[in-house]
Image (cartoon, rainbow, N blue to C red):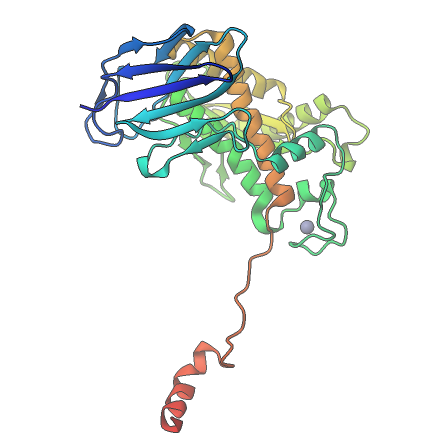
Length: 345
Ligand SMILES: [Zn+2]
């Protein structure tokens, strides 16, 4: 029988909370995991609560939550144990704040972690300042000035597409949790040049009706938008998407919703409505307060957008080329040369 436990340390006095007879079987086995939460509380922490689902299927995410009250003490660390082996450490004051023991094959990434440069980039994008330590030129298109504006719009190297896909994947994951049966990149119209959306989900706005979505991450600070407000830029992008997709979606008896956000995480009105719809659904499904779900979903999407924005600034656009062979010949002639060499040696 396997046990899961965790230790919670305050900065002055330490306290230990043990959860016995908890998650049985391996987290990745074929059979559903069964849990039996018999908790043994040891020291003077208040309002302790341990939250875990009673059973999940293999391969699904499992969220383990501990709530604690240290009064005026500061949290020093939380350490999780599985079968008396440590698999996750949280040190709020250190960098990185989280450490995972990979041997346990447990993914405890909460997707909220940002590296120092991602965090600084997120701030510079939000306040439209020039990021620090910028390269002098673009390694993708060779533009001589690698500014924030260029980093956010240069399509060479696929980083702008990667940013869009990051947002699509996060929203797709949330839709899967909320409604299930989410399809990525559904084909809306196969005739002519073809038309493809980003997500298809059944039952979002109306029962059993397919809802199609297309995502755009807009740089609202681009020079072409200089004379306009952020809101008007985002609404124009929504209208443009509707002109492109709405008729084709209605032809398929589906609804269409443009999901537009700025590069620094300002949501257009329809994106905002969609996020709240996800929250409402998850709140009902998980029986959790709507307000806490709204905070979690907004933060989850916002962090993903900002990390994707930082990727456009920091990631490499140019592919690395291997060095030329030190032996002085290419693969195409190597056999002949090698046969010559054979006789020489
Ligand atoms: Zn470029």
